[in-house]
Length: 392
Image (cartoon, rainbow, N blue to C red; front, side):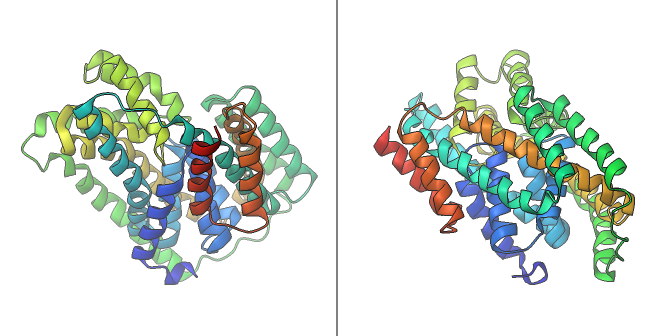
């Protein structure tokens, strides 16, 4: 399947399925995207995927959703970015909306911890396989291996957005120093890609402002407008992943606006964790509490739309400058650093697994299913959840 023959409907259904199975946080979602888009369908190369992850890491917003916007843009321009992003968010949005309705109708929900316990070791295996598959292409020698190792150690030891940014910047500088004489000659951009780039600029400045007005196409403009502006404003200060964002959102929705009680906020974050997709889908719970269904939609648009627009603009710029031999050398240094950061995510996610004899068993089974039998993660994760129900 080639990118040129991939319809928008095919992309939407593909990312709808990805969004239905990507439990375990942002790196798990990226791993599932890599498995489907790069390994199985060959729509992008490992290098292109790593470039997207690198770009998403240094921009505000949820890293995984920004990466999805990048993938969609690479494949079909702005329409592709829109359908892929909507597709990957929609399953978790609908599930969280249903949980929110049940929560505010019947009170606190029973925990589904056993199923989630089964997800964690399987997600660890999925991220490890993604790191292995991407690393085979990105790590071409001792220099790349050292960059990946140092990046992994730094992320495991310290972590956080500042360290992530320092790793990306340092790896890019090392790439420029070490690989600048080894970069291939710049390739000429095809005319079709140039045309797509021009269309991106035009659509970015025309479609985006129109989309920003969507929350105000209703009668209850005051509360919906406040919801949208609150979440859109916070999204532009979100660096380093959803968990870094929790203190800011807690202060805003509990203390400043009193939209939720402290217990409701804790439950909202818990629901975001047990649903597939990004943890920031918890915004839908908050929006539903404030203004019902429209509130859930507006809060979700607010938290994801502004960073996605920035990501599309940055992708447009990257597509133009990456033909430079200098930029190629920089990217050659950054790619193994991203591999190291993904390996650190394997450690971080694995450490949250339950200390139980079933955890290594589920991990090994998930690893075998992918490495030997090439089983799609759409089957691996639900099976792991069922195993969690039965074994823990």
